[in-house]
Length: 197
View 1: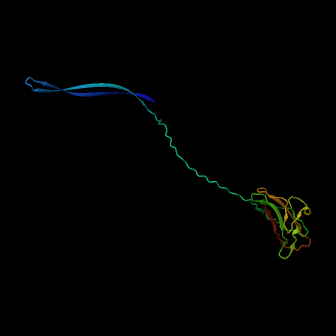
View 2 (view 1 turned 90 degrees about the vertical axis):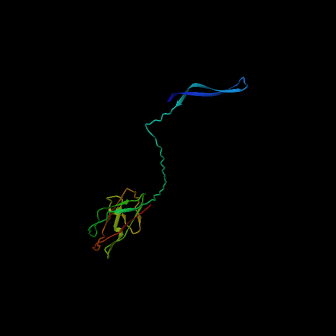
């Protein structure tokens, strides 16, 4: 915004002059007369001045702040893991020598983060004095197969032939046949599942 301002200046100049008059009288004496004259001169000057003013808005004030953020890059390597669990416990119940059980199911779950291959092995059944051979337990990936069409469990580890994927459980089915003439008793067997990735 521009506005004009007029300023009037008055200068007063005062000059004083001294005049000396020397006069000689008839008797030969001199007379000196001093006469002071003062002259006053007044000058009036009108001057035009242009003033520039800056308007500063009063609506808001911005305060600049600086925020410093420190970022650290972290690299984590997740190692492959394959850890398997088996459930539930297989219970064939009471059986008579010569009988073959119904299918008993067991679920293998991979709680790791990569697929796991799977192998199976077992021990002989034992009541502490007597045994039932490990091969009397049969297993398969398919429900409802005949006992003789299923795989025999063995002491050396055997591949199941299927991988177990994380979050994708694998079902196995088991049957047991008690040999004819087997001694009566409470028998137990250990079945071991081994996973690897």
